[in-house]
Length: 335
Image (cartoon, rainbow, N blue to C red; front, side, top):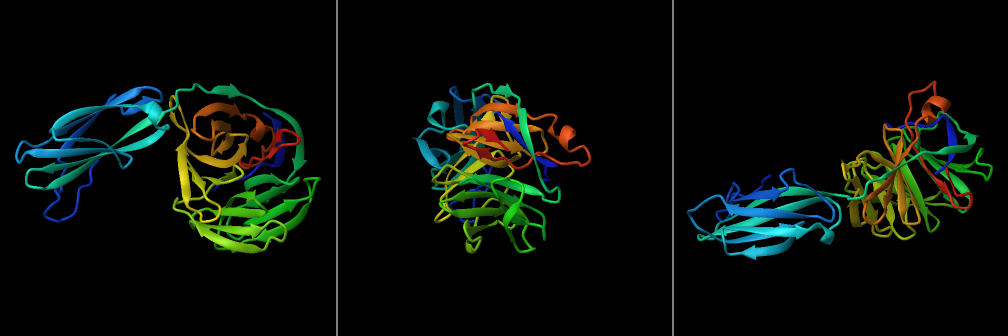
């Protein structure tokens, strides 16, 4: 899947309704129309949901309108409009549902979606190389992280997935752990002396003691794939190859919240390795030579960082991708 650098580079920078039960219809009872017609709205603007009954007999006596499974309007009319201010919700893909009931007590459900994207036009940034450090080209880098002055790396591929701890020179492996051959290792993060590691398609993660590398726990996650991992000092922050970022409780591993990364032109997919720095998340965009910088609370893209030249200047002999990103707070540099 996602491969490596030749060297570590340090830079400054519609419808479902229902069961066969007699009180549920098998086809939509209502039409749901979104304005604007493309169902994409810039955050800060409003959009209108128009709901109308598809049938005159039997008469519709009640329609409930839901946004993300939260009731926002109930009407006894068979047609109405609801205008929603997007400042009340975060950017992202939002589900809209109607539940309509006719005079015979039969109900039907209809669904659609609306996309809300950031209003911020991102900056375009570049980088400057200040140093390079030798790195083993056999390592399929999946994650990088500094913790208490040491650099940690996770690698991927079945039978080749390791976690490494480097000395302060950042050149020699001080400690290593190989995970079971059945797993493809992915991103790592370290919180409260615990290393949390994702796997690619097994929907499973592992927890290790950072001092001994002893495995002390396992967890599962709902996303089909695990990609990048970081933390904000309290919660784990995970990417899964889509535009979604999930915040996960490190004790019970439940998703506390999720955001979607967007800018005025749409959503940013293929979010890969992550790094959290002072309320901002930096993410490699897989198969591109870009890093995206976005607000950790809203997912609004602040900047795209153009990393063109790294692959051709340092890795001309391989067909690789940018992967692995770590911030050194004392040096104020990215690796």
